[in-house]
Image: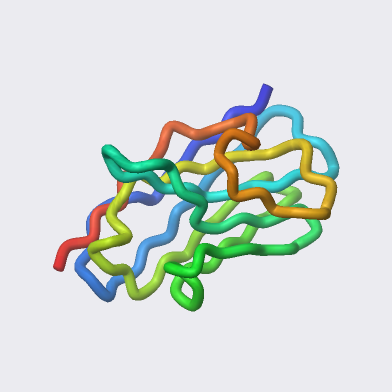
Length: 126
């Protein structure tokens, strides 16, 4: 079993920055993918950024150039640096892990991630 705990959410004015962290505990294989997703009430959960243990990354078009995903494999810590935040970035942000990643594709489908954190609220005011 894997536990994921997010931290670092909060409220910021448009143009500001926040950094989200996700601490993983439990067993993860040598190769796995982790991702940040976000969800607004009434809307589907969407992939924001994903990273594999091989260092490959993938971003949603809406956050490219503003958000950076990174991870410390040894510490099992996932980070999301969010810059130039906009009101449309307001959402609950979730950390997730896909232990079946084989290096071929960083899936954006939430149903392919086995483990989820409890979420961290990010609110961007105009």
